[in-house]
Length: 101
Image (cartoon, rainbow, N blue to C red):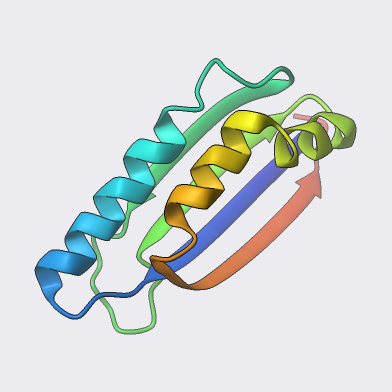
């Protein structure tokens, strides 16, 4: 199994704009649940700590294999979501790792 974790910081000229961006990102990725073969689960959360070094949003997902993760990266629904959020993110961090659990 492959675990895929992505964290973003979002931009915005006001706190309301940042909040709207976080919510858009969350809703967009939640729309992928059940649509991508090989994706076991997807969970996305908005940071509650509000510490200055925290990312704003995190995605945690699990895939059957590295091939399934690669297919997800090119899946039309994932590409649609990437297009929606491309303008709102100012930083992105990712870790993918293999596990037996």
